[in-house]
Length: 391
Image: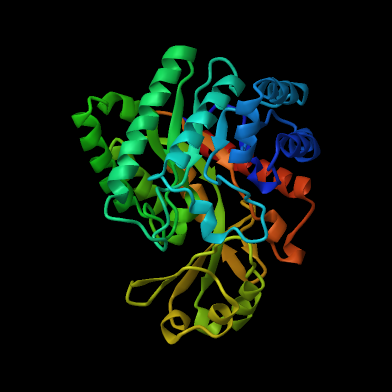
């Protein structure tokens, strides 16, 4: 049984970080106090937006400032969330979070720059990871060469990470994060794409480099929302020799029997908010999976018959990972337990990171002070991991 021995991480995309000053302020106001309350070593899973990376690249002394800030606060950083490129705290993010996609030079260059920064932040003797967008969003237009362009850029980034390893001795792995309604959303799609990526890598003599440096970020609630068997999904990825470089410890919302559960649909309607995308999936009594791009009040309160008469809804709304339920709504916490148990059975240890980025948009009664909420999540996660390790 193998689980990461590194300090548990939480993702700092939950608080603003559009400038280096904001990043450092977030570390002081939220991360360090959370670590103090948690009472154990804690890693900052930094989100460094492109605007911050530009600061760090244009004025190299600022990287040292960030290193010093982490050291002064007794925090470590071994992983970055390089999924949101722009302002993840603007009034409306929605589908913009998937832009630029992996067919673009902007995404490629940003990722390489992030890797170079992480190589300087990482503690000695650790490996690093970068979670990233699942190629792009299916609802946005893509030309016929899209996948080929993505493959070409991923080969480039793998080669760049290999050179970075030669130059610095630091191993950094890219972690592509499947997500509902994205180009890579299901386990089947991930396996098929990696077959294409590896085929191209063999042609270019980069098969070993790609195998070493490119894998997945397994965001547990994403596969739960898809109604996948998460433990079987993880076993299939392992059988396909696709490395899970990072696990996002997450829970989503569940609503059983929506036709007779008007109270839960009413509560769900309060989770409609303008900033983030909340894909809704419904499983019908015949096993068909329906998908809506975003949760809306009409969909929650007056759904079409095929949604209303479904067995269950699942909504891509990250909710506190310690919660089994939120009022009449359930969560996918049971899937989180199954997924982490399957992760523990791997013969390597992915990075583990709590990623509930939605604290500030939870309905009012569900929103404790951020440090309190983060601490409760981390304590619950530590207990869950301890339970798994003891079996």
